[in-house]
Length: 107
Length: 125
Image (tube, rainbow over all chains, first blue to last red; front, side, top):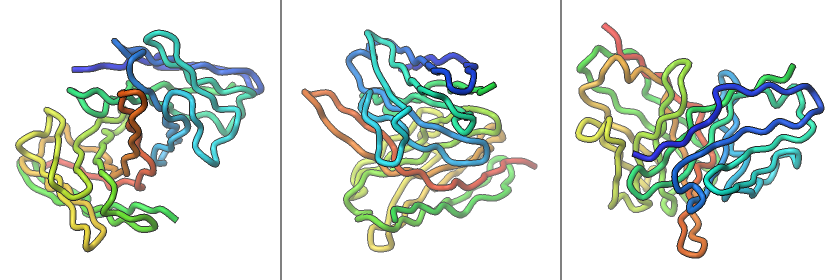
């Protein structure tokens, strides 16, 4: 089955840039998206098609991909960005696949 | 406003059954594929199932295949998940979500947006 790997945790200081990676075999030939989930809330889409931002998502959220690694970047990180972040891709055999999630701490 | 509202969660004994519902509003439900995703307490997201817009095609995660059945009633704008032979490890919040899909240069991109608020299923004796 297809797998996506994320670091369990990332820490960032307020105002700095946070980067969360997501790697997977042949991810370079797929599209990645990213969800933000705050405690007690449902996931919210923040990036789709590797680097597109839905309406209503702040410009400080951006996505990129290099080779088989996708990256979610949060510029000028704010305290409200503290959350769990999940990457997701579509695999024709495994269907919807999520990464294990990354807990972003803003301290 | 696009909205998804799950219901039907609760406490069920191991081996028991439960049917979840997801009421959709604010969009043309009958034109979208829909998904169920679950999240065990303190754990990550796990995809469960997917159904085509007209209900003619369904797919399941290997972990639930043969025990769970996804269905929909487009006249009622409602998605369902029938869960049988439930196990303790399937205690989780179950979310429904709408699929968005594009195909760019032959590559399929699928993402889920929006998600419902979730309904908690507890499997315990």
